[in-house]
Length: 387
Ligand SMILES: [Zn+2]
Ligand SMILES: [Zn+2]
Image (cartoon, rainbow, N blue to C red; front, side, top):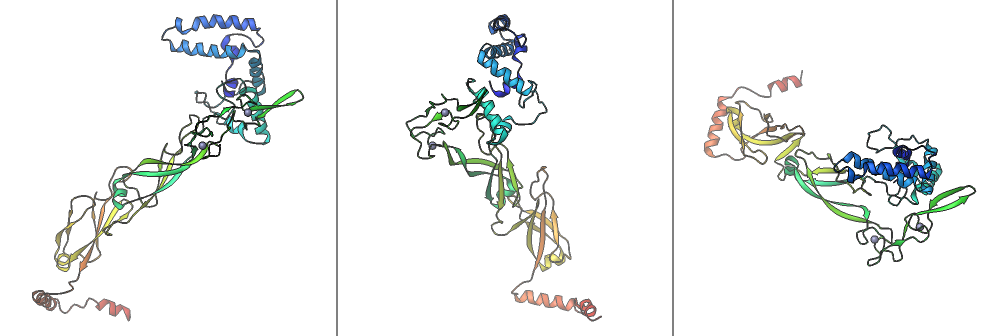
């Protein structure tokens, strides 16, 4: 039973008695209800079983004079009507008991200590707010992918360094071969108390600093704190089509939660290496490539083979009269987008000028020159420059 249980649950109502009921009335009512809802008498009835548990819980508190008093005090403090988060009904309240009462110092801290004292002492399982489930931290890391892995997606191993339970002592803080022992001052509750007139204020036990345990021989690795930096490796699937500089979120791959809390998320900043020979480039979901074509292919038109990334070469029809630098689009041969559609391959042609000529080629070119004589390609330029 926790602070939350005390504030949420009306044990009197559960047992069908009034707030002023005598111990005898409570016992009688409990026995009647317990017989009625006992699992032996209601085999396989989950509802009856849940009811039986509620009744038992209510009786555990109300049959104990001290705990009944604590329960009454807690509910009068909050009017008994506070709905706490996480009650399973999807209630609209969104405040956190731990943050409200667990903060160190200030009024919140004192209230937290007070509540911790009221509820922590005999409840067994949860001591105040310390054992509250805590979501693991979000973790940031980086990875570098090859050009192809970024296009196709890849599974990468990521080494993550973060604080967690010390591996050597398994988080106990005690040296190997020893175990922590229950704090003799607070008997394991973690709470000490201070009397201020009619109020008994609770505060974290000074001997164990609220931990409830004391360590005689501290673990040398973590100096007894039970916490240490550790490195772990996670396998992460980077989706196809990731771009340089992009940040990928991997839900639930961050730091482990504590006390049964969910893990945090992992954010991976991705760096993408250029293509090995600079063959391919990226422009969002499009791949780019520059291909050389001969003067005659560009002038006469041709069907040329163009490489595609990780696949068979594709055929590209170059029309007659294609100038150097023109870009053609080959649909669907680019990078897969988030929505599953494919980008394109953008092919830019680069007309090559032969560096050396055979006699036959020279003769042919000279004939070509003579055949096209008369047209000066710079005529417009020269005229415009002087007008
Ligand atoms: Zn340790
Ligand atoms: Zn202690």
